[in-house]
Amino acid sequence: MAHTRKTILDALKDRLATLAGFADDGKVSRARTSAINKEDLPALTVSWADDDEVSRLRPSSVIEGNELTHGYERTIPVSIVVHVADNEPEDAFDAIAELIEIELKEFGFLGEAVTDFHLISTRFYVDPTTGLSLGAGRLIYLLDYKTAADPSKPAI
Image (tube, rainbow, N blue to C red; front, side, top):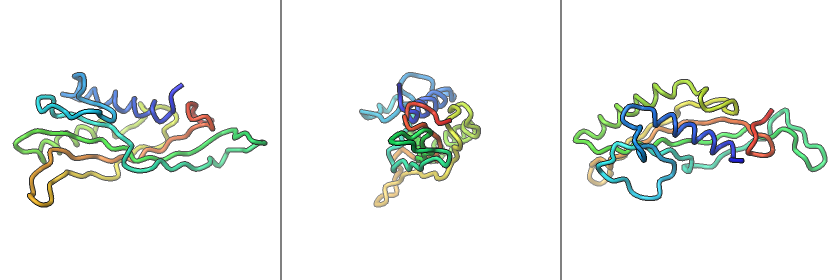
């Protein structure tokens, strides 16, 4: 069984692949392993690797002997990296960011384990020495979810 985090992030990836212009294979990916070809742009990458996941023992959890009966409340920042190739890269980024923000304003599609999912930060990358666009930006969402002591199972 997959970790609840993987299940949630895969659902997010699948939802982003429904956006206009992102349905083709490879347009939306989790943790890319190679560079994106320019002809495949724009593209999106979903990742949670920017920071640690923080876990707290759920208030309803009970430790009986060596067994945790309910589990954890977990919080992770989720990055949606927007890769663009355009004469106006900041405008292209903003247009795609708007599509993403509209699509993700409700998060019920992520499953019952998710208790909150909201945008906390947006950034467009520019080379600080030249002022030239680096052709990417990101939206960071804060994801709160719960698991049982076994992270492949949602908490009760």
